[in-house]
Every structure is written in structure tokens, then in C-alpha cells.
Image 1 (cartoon, rainbow, N blue to C red):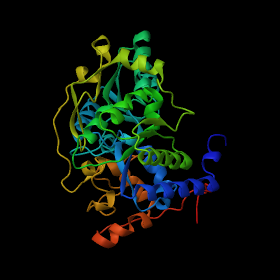
Image 2 (cartoon, rainbow, N blue to C red; image 1 turned 180 degrees about the horizontal axis):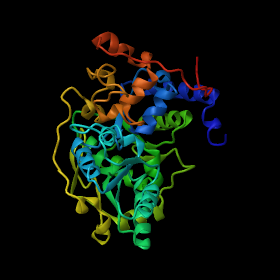
Image 3 (cartoon, helix red, strand yellow; image 1 turned 120 degrees about the vertical axis):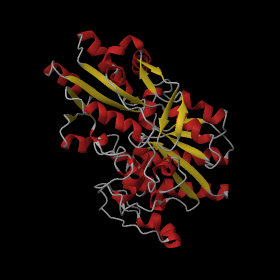
Length: 394
């Protein structure tokens, strides 16, 4: 398959691994590289990339999972909206099992709320057309990647005059989150593997502050094994040459200026919130989107009464520290025991892009072995067979 098979070739992966090892010898210090996107985290574990890297390189998993960074209070607000008798509440599947303070959307549905899983906000709009006597609410969440589809749906609803449709907007922005991470003294990073999907929309220019203000290199990466290995190699090249630049490995998809049509739609429909709460990162200024006053009739926060309360995380859950890259999933005491994909306590175990879900699903024992031996946490680790992608370097 074009643009897939050639990015999984064993020989090229072996060559990149050797080049990465050579560069590590020149740097002569431990390196911490953060992959921002949850999609990268899953690719890293799916293909065993961390296992073939030199021990000197530690990959830190960032907060690039939109479901994971959703605070409990916003989930409670969504559930409160869904419990209105005249509401059909629609959401992506990932959000169904995310625990709020008392229940989840999935449990609320079992208790009688009309909550439906959709694949697109346009599906929700169609439900609104089919049910004119009901109020249809779409749970809009995600980074800049999904914001354009939300914006275009609102524009279409406005053009067609669909009055029984609204959105509970929880879109967040990646750049303010990266600033918050870089300002955290507990997290000393040497570079970033930049998000691919977000960058398809915003381009590479917004990352310039990372190199100019914080003097860190960043390489925007694709999601196949060779994409990620090449991005790490490019980061090491910058470090060896004492450079701090924004580079684009994913140039077959990502353009410097991003997707101008998508950005125009976002700017037309949304405004930036003064502040927005992120799980683990707290309130981050200018990090969330809200619906512009011009489209207030589609804003569920104005249509419905919501609790709007700040709810603390479960005391045993370490999702916050994991999202900040301070802890790894196995360092959480409930990982793999009380907290599993079937019985999640935290969001990182629920989402398909969550770091805890990746560790649990792919069970990379060799990656965790040093910590397991040193600290002996009480965890149960599953091991699923790896996909036949021809990437094993054994």
C-alpha cells in the first residue's frame, strides 16, 4: 500500500537505528524526547520503537490525547445536558466510557438518557433533521484536528436554519499546552516529536516559539515506524549540531502554512477562551475554544443549565502526572489492577490514544523491565500479539 508499506521496511529501520546510535554516542548524555501526540505514543508501542532505541533515549509521553485531558467537571456537564428529557446527546465513541465524578456517558445511557455514538458532527446534524421535536447536542472535543469539522457543521446548520441543533464545545489548542509544559521546571526536555494531525491544520509556523524562546528542537512527524525513527534521527542531528529549529519530517502531508480553509472556518466560528481547565495541567490561558456570539444559538452552554464545577481527580489516579510526562503509566499503583480498559479509573486508560491504554494493550515488558525490577509495583501486564508489519528487527 503506497505511503504505508515503504514506511515499514525493516532494512531502512535498521539503518536508521544504527544512525541514531551513532549520534547518541556523540551527545554523551541522557536524552528526554517528548512525543506530543497520543497517536505517536500508540505507534511507538505498537511497533516496538522504544525497544530498539539506545538506552540513553527516553521517550516522554505528552498530553496530545484530547479525551485524556478532559477534566471530570466537563464530563459532568456533558452528562447533565444528556439527562434532559428532550435531549438526544451525541458523541464520539472514545468519550462514552470516560468517568465523570459519579458516572460516565455510557452509564448514563444505561440509566435512560438518549446518548448516541456518532462518527462525525454531520451525523448529529442529520439526527437533528430527523428529530425536529428534540434538542440534539453534539459533544465537540479534540484539538485543532477536529475543530474544522465542528466549525463547518455549525456553518451548515446556520445555512439550513436547523434550530434544534447545538454543540457542547470542548475543543482545546495544542500551542498553549506546549508552553505550559515548557514552563514546568519539573520537566526538562531535550526536544519534541511534533504532532502530525494537528500540524495538518495549523502548519509548522506556530511551533517557532519552541526553538526561538525555549531553544528546543522540534520535528513534526508522521505515524509510521520510519516516520518516527527519522524524526528522532533529525532531532539528534540538531542536538549534535547545536541547532534548535522547527523541522517537518511529515512533509508529504503537512504544509508550512497549514490548511488555510480549515483555519478560516475555525476563526469564523470559534473564539479563544480566556482560560480552560486541562486534566493534570490545570487552567491554561488561551487554550480552549468557544462558539462565537454570532452562532450563539448553537452553543449548548447557553441553551442548557450545567453544573460548571471543578471536580478533583480520583486520589489513586495519576493521569495528571502521566499527561505532564512526569510519571509513566506503570508508576501508577492502580495501573493494570483496579484500572483497566474494562474498568477505567482515569482517562488515560479509556481513550484509544491514551498512554495507559497503550502500555496495557501492547504490554511492552522489556520497556518496563527496569522499573518493574527496581520498584516492583503490583501490576498486571497483558501481552497482545504484535501486528504482522514486517518491522521486527530481531
